Image (tube, rainbow, N blue to C red):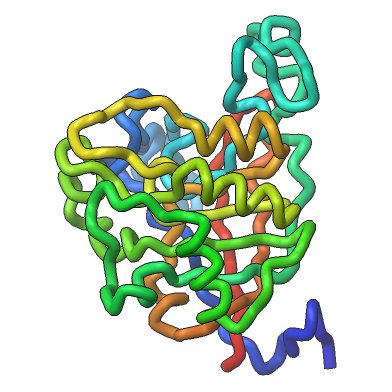
Length: 269
């Protein structure tokens, strides 16, 4: 019987952690909107045997929907992770260093830190800042220790308000997420990947809209930790598990600063 990281595959349930891609879905205002056009329709060309096919054109930003941030997504003072000058790494063909194609697909353990459960709620309030203390308590509650080189999924419950556009985008009331001390806690644990449910893996204060992104700076630029955003974690939270087997492989778009992904989680049946 096949096992991966202690998970017996034949006795596991697969959960889809991606939000569906569709026109009009919540997304950051500073990224191109997702669009799908049926460019070839059934009937445009019909073969002699009566068959036809349809196909589409998809237009999307790399940071729209469930996606992985490449390390080259954020620079600080003109410098990318590892001391690479951003001006030297970017050009008409995208990034020559730290593009999303450099991301090694991940199949391994992920700890689930259910922060709302600490406070007896399903969804954290808008603008709530997750602290390092919250993460330590959630780790103890999960009964699963955060380990170097692995993944951590930090729940806010925000998946549950995906269909409430104004709430989910948080432009008025803000969005819950980790603050700088939580980011330093994650970096100190040596994780490879962090993921969350919101458009931006940060606490966004009420009324701020676009704001500085200190958590992105700490994780991407300083620590070299990839970020997964806009994950759908509600079903995983409802299962009450403290960890899962995570499979993560973003589209290898050469030179891109991020790319769509369909994360899958395996939990005991």
